[in-house]
Image 1 (cartoon, rainbow, N blue to C red):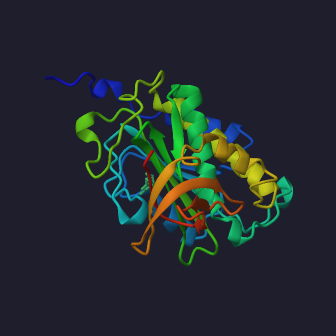
Image 2 (cartoon, helix red, strand yellow):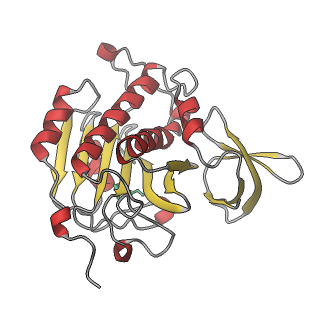
Length: 284
Ligand SMILES: O=C(O)CCCC[C@@H]1SC[C@@H]2NC(=O)N[C@@H]21
C-alpha cells in the first residue's frame, strides 16, 4: 500500500521566520545555526562551546546522520520529519543585564527536566496531543515515545551544557526506531504537524523557562519549575521498574520528584530510594 502522506508534507523549515522570531523575542537565544544535514546537533553545539561561543546558540538540523540519545543509544532523524535541535547554555555565568546570578552546578540536573516541561507544554497546546513526561524527560503519548532529550556537559567547554531535543513530527511507522515503542505527532493524530510554529513555540517556551529558572538562581521550587514538572509528569503515582546505570533494577511506586530533580521510588518494604539516573518502565 502506498504511504498515506508524501514528502510534500515535509517542507523545509522557514529559516527567515525562525531567525526573525529568535531575534525579536526577549529570550536568551543569540544565534541560529540551521543545517540541512549534520551528524549530531549536540556535537555541533559542543564544538561551538569549546571554541568559546557564548550562551544562546541554537543549532537546528533538518536531518541527522549520527543523532545520539541517552545511554549511548542512536536517535533516528529522517530528513524534515522531526525537530532536532540543540541549545548551548552556560548556567554558571552570571548575566548582569538580565539579573541572572550564577547557577550552582548541583542544580544543572534540572536542565533536561526544564526542557521536558517546555516540550510537553508546546506539544499539548499546539498539537493537542495528550502527552506526558516519563521521568526524567521522555515525551510519551500513551506507552509510545514521541520525543527525547539529551543534556550533556561539554568537556573542556568551561561549564557549558548542551541540551538537545528530538521530536518525531511526521515520521511514518516504517521510519520509527525499532528498539523501543515509539510514535510521531502525525501518527498520534496531532492537530498540528507544521514544524515551523512548533519549533518557534518550543524555543519560546524553552527560553521562558530557562529565564525563570536562571532568575531564581537555579531553584526549581522558587521558579515554579518543580510544580510544572510534577503537573506534566506521568511517572509519579505509577508502579515502576527502574533500570539503574549499575545494571541493578529497582521496583516500587514512584512517590515524587524531589527538589534536586531525582525520582523518589518507594519499594515494597516502604523504603524510599532517590534515583538520579535510570530507565523507567511504567508497569501499571
Ligand atoms: O531520548 C533520548 O535518548 C534522547 C534523544 C535526544 C535526541 C536529540 S536530537 C537533537 C540532539 N542531537 C543529538 O544528537 N541528540 C539530540
